[in-house]
Image 1 (cartoon, helix red, strand yellow):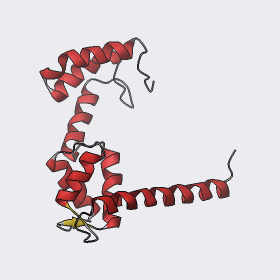
Image 2 (cartoon, rainbow, N blue to C red):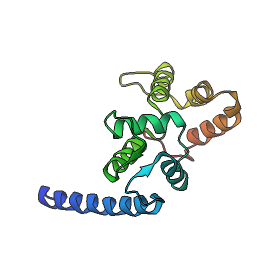
Image 3 (tube, rainbow, N blue to C red):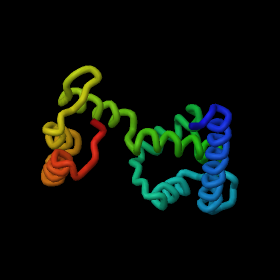
Image 4 (cartoon, rainbow, N blue to C red):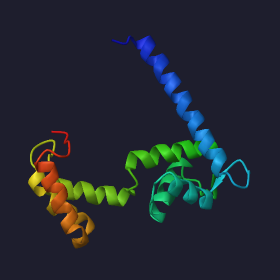
Length: 152
């Protein structure tokens, strides 16, 4: 067991570690050494990290990170905020999250709403279009057979 003091000390070390990792990323992609990350540098950085954000998602996360000021570039602290926002939203913009929530609620039961595995394929097709039909069916089958872990 961890007491609060130990937990607090761990969280402090964890935060400092991630700050140092973000600094490495910031320095790597601040190509012009301006001390800020331009939108082009941000796009390159996100692709390098394996993110494929839409233009709308980038703009929305930057707006939140910069506290609604119109930003042409991000400071280090704003980049950290951007990455936290992006990770939290998993790359979806607010409108897309609202759409996904609506689809989930439509196919769910109970309070809080829980979607039966049998509805996953239909929900994925509704969210992403018919081009995902085969993948959605395979994913639903894998989840139903226990090949993929599920939360409940």
